[in-house]
Image (cartoon, rainbow, N blue to C red; front, side):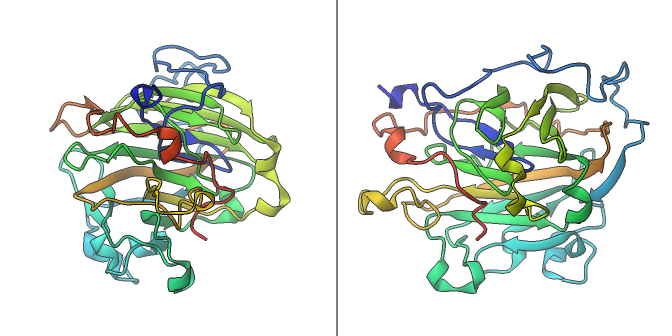
Length: 357
């Protein structure tokens, strides 16, 4: 029975940069390197995070890495700053995708005494995006909140650049895992699933995966060679240093199509995909931004920290911090329906473009 085998995961599907999503069960026959451990070295990976003997060092790298974009959250920043266009925080943000309320109703700054400051994105029942501020374009299928960091496309989308971020899901605001979720993207989100964190390429082949837990930091760095069109993945959990876990591996040539050159929009986000609605015409059910069913939202959010971009072949080893308030816990699947068909609930595996437009 398909439903009995259904799992769920965070998926990081690399397109121009990457998209990270929580979605449905894996399509049979799909390319997949399977679940791996950060202590093992997968096929195609080599060395540590910097490719040298000091790769396991928890201290910041002393190599020639240069941050060309830094979404730096300082202790002075506060939630009210997202409503003030002249604040230091707002200067880091190009755009916020949100519902009808003030930005601070959906985006907040969370300070911790012994851990990195986080930016928290939450969704509500009114988290419906109106592209172009036109009700005719309303994305009634999605519930979404996005923050678009104000990257310099001329420097971040050329040469060799590495994209870093730490992501944390909160057991006090659990996601509803009958739905798919997109957590970050540059251009094209993709969605399918298992109880793992996955890094995938443009063709949705899984490059790396590890178990998914609430209240645990997932640290990622993805190096994109914009000339050779290759991807290299580094990852760790908690305060562990980044390690190379996949690559360099070739990406699909479509990812470097001239139509995408220097046009990528970087999103950190929480997008909740709808369930298929039997009332919708069958041919409309794959149009998930605009069709589908959403239950009332109780409390759902995701937190980000360590968001920055470096240039060059070497990568930086950030000084990761982690909250010690709650023990990381595996996601409970009791909320997942045992009677509904996951293939019916999720009718597609990818968008042609990032759903901002």
